[in-house]
Image 1 (tube, helix red, strand yellow):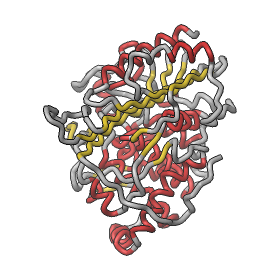
Image 2 (image 1 turned 135 degrees about the vertical axis):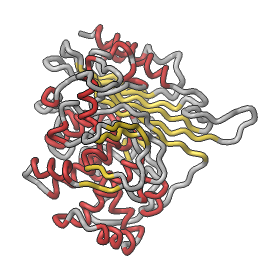
Image 3 (image 1 turned 180 degrees about the horizontal axis):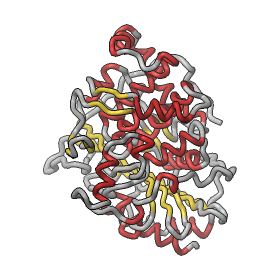
Image 4 (image 1 turned 90 degrees about the vertical axis):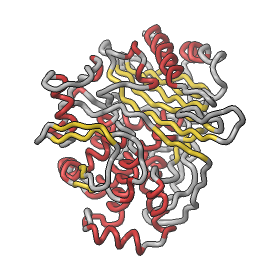
Amino acid sequence: MAHNPYPARPGLMAAGTALLIFLSGAAALAYPIDGFEQTGIRRLVHAQKVIDKTEKGTPLPPGALLATDQVQLRMRSTPFHLTGTSDPVDPVLQNKITALFPNLDESYSLAVMDITPGKAIKLALWQPQRRFALGSVGKLAIAAGLFTELKTLFPDDFEKRRKMMKTRMVTAGPWIETDHHNVPVYDPSTGRYESRPIRQGDRFSLYEWADHMISASANAAASTLWKEAVLMRRFGNAYPPSLEQEKAFFASTPKSQLGDMAAAVVNGPLLALGITPQEFHLGSFFTAAGKRIIPGEGDSNGSPMGLMKYLLAMEQGLICDPWSSLEIKRLMYSTARRIRYASSPVLGSAAVFFKSGSLYRCVAEPGFTCKKYMGNKDNYMNSVAIVEHPDGRIYMVALMTNVLKKNSAVDHQTLATRIEAIMKQGQ
């Protein structure tokens, strides 16, 4: 297990710098659609009406229609551990995966693990320890931190944790500035549905903020939820504080102490899983306003191995505890338009648990025009996916790339198609 440098309370962070930086993660809505009663996530009511054809909307692929109780952890009784240094690969699967890469950009890095029940686990790796800027994939660390703090508040009462997630309403404030990501906003009382960026004064439950953070990949939601997890750490059983208490805490606490507390909240749970800072580390908030209030401790970086360790721990019920791991997995369940890796047509009948993110940076270059997802300085595009087929096949993928001046979304989709063919052959 990795040494945890984050104490239960504070240390020091250093602020990060940037060129022209764009952090993004396209929307791909999550959580099982029948989950409204459990979670209070209002956009699920609209999604159900689209399925029932009482409201207009985009039809969902068959793999997006699982009920809440059909989403389960798949490795709770499987004592498998990734070391990150001497993990045994399956030679047949490894040869097939290796054959994918001669004609791809040298930055492609990948970890694939077949966890089909009743069969031996199979692992294949390609540059698994290569480090990349995380982009929005790093929001999974906030999810782990949030549920860890909830467990501290209610160690033995899952229903109290769920009630807090469902009933704690948080008003959008300065932490959301500035974010361009659209989120689904639905009012069941009026039937009004819109897709737009989060605005000052919007009110969402913790469950809805988490849904916006993971499924719509909203940076505003990520910073707001991270802030709430810090407040849980600070106020303990007195959470939630009043708005006046919250403002006083952030105004009176030294920046270095705030920074250390924030780092401990999101990185401590990763270290507790044996994920090293080189493999997965969240360095700073996702909005400029968040960074001003709580300074970061550097860049957010990770590797396919670190992300695979996260997925494995989740499937084993080890991210905080089985209840928390399962809720994170349900929040990752894709129940709308699929993007990038998850958009491969061959995955249409499969349930896909997915998080994607990107970060691109541009510098002045003669004849070059900076475009979305086409940076010439950095152009990171990362995805994690768990694919569960109706025939029982299950595998996990962590993919990270940095292909300059090119939107790699189609290439990721193509790679998903080719990996699916390999995994199907292995059965």
